[in-house]
Amino acid sequence: MIALRLVRLIERHADELAAELVVKFETSSHTAELRKVPVEELRGRIQEILRHLSDLLLTKAGPEIEQRYFEIGERRASQGVAFSAFCWAIVLTKEHLWEFLQRHSFARGPVEIYGEMELLRLLDQFFDRGLCFATEGYEQYMQLQNGSENLAHETRRASL
Image (cartoon, rainbow, N blue to C red; front, top):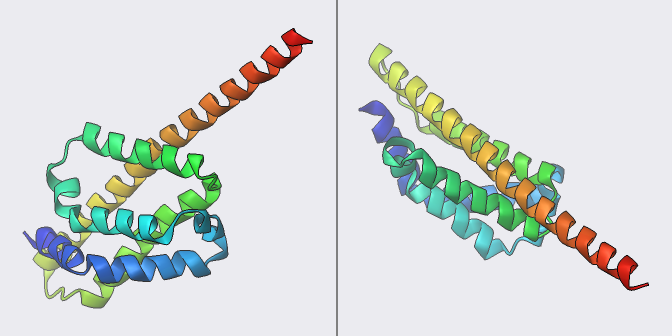
């Protein structure tokens, strides 16, 4: 399977790709808020995803991906990362992987081109769903925070 060969290529270059992405995040005005996340945590999360990309794309069940990205969304919200910066990080990650595949692609014929198209479809689906699940986690965290603030405000008002 051509798509699997390309995914394995990404997995083998996970450390290099993660380092490049961290630099992109640090230099992009869209992701300036990610500076609130410790660099090692950010790099480690990217490496974890890229090193296990074949499992995530081809074998992992939806609930596992949902839980993983839900937790990432909650974590970024708890760190005070703006939601827009978080979304840009996912978009930049997807674009970076596409650029990497273009640089290392050796499409020779229709079968190889089809394999690359299939992989791009899987990557799109994975990152789009990841973004949606992370949004849910982010929103839940913010709702809980707002609920706590409202409760504290009501408690203060009642004690007056």
